[in-house]
Amino acid sequence: MKFAPKPIQKIPILILTGFLGSGKTTLLNRILTQTPRSAVIINEFGTTPIDQQLLREHNVPLSTLSGGCLCCQVRGALMPVLKNLRMSWEGNNEKPFDRIIIETSGVANPEPVLDVVLKQNWLSKRYNLQGVIATISALTGADTLNRYPDAQAQIAWADSIAITHTDLANPEQIQYLEARLAELSPAANRIYVINGDIELERLLDFPAQYRYLRTENSTDLPDHGFNSITLQFEHPVAWQHLEGVLLKLIGKYGDRLVRVKGLIFDPDFDHPLLVQGAVGILYPPAHLPARESDDFISRLVFIMAGAVNGLKEEVLSQLSQPY
Image (cartoon, rainbow, N blue to C red):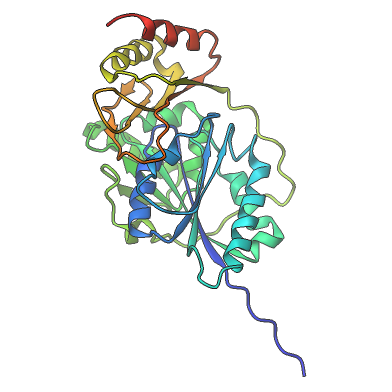
């Protein structure tokens, strides 16, 4: 008498994508607040991971893939991480998580990530793709879509589109962006988000999915043309001084400086400040809770469209001047 093999329980995977500065990690924080039993894989383009610091209020299994994009430089690292998470899950009687959330870098094309999850035989038997969420800024999203093919790919593959920064954009900007989204991804849900506030049920109410993935092996994607530098400061950094320096850089480089992100320790505060900026915009710093593991080393990541020659020296020179 033959017994039917026990069916393999699949773990759902949620992919979170979106261009630089569109609010992915803010939204991820909100998702984790409502679904705390999640494991998270964060992919950061810069060599120094910052986004993991933004999740400091959540005690979740966290893996970081930095120094490149999941669609190219660190693509080969995704499968081992997913295998290790699955084996850890199977080895525990009390399962450590119920789902996995993959946050891609801001310049990643999600198609190769879908290839890994859906087409790799061992993974596809043990994981189930729940859906793809893309964030896009109502303030800068239309220009981003016009300039960067990777941003268009993020929207085209999305099942749900979270439109952020609607409180900062005017009605004409939102209307134009809505029209572009309808062209690129007409079947996707479109949901407005303000500071990460969203109804999770609406966000995860994905439409029917009919995904076309190429049967031939996909070749390496062309170079994005983005470059990054990271600065670290073992001494405290005054936000009042840093703000002026960053505003000058944003004004000088314009849309070439696509992202500024960092965690700084200001002597006026007993907790770190999160610094964020996107094309032409520097946001007010966010105050993060202090942790015993804080090393009080301030870190800044700059991502440029094109070369970064001389940027590091320029930032250090300006910070060394009195204010």
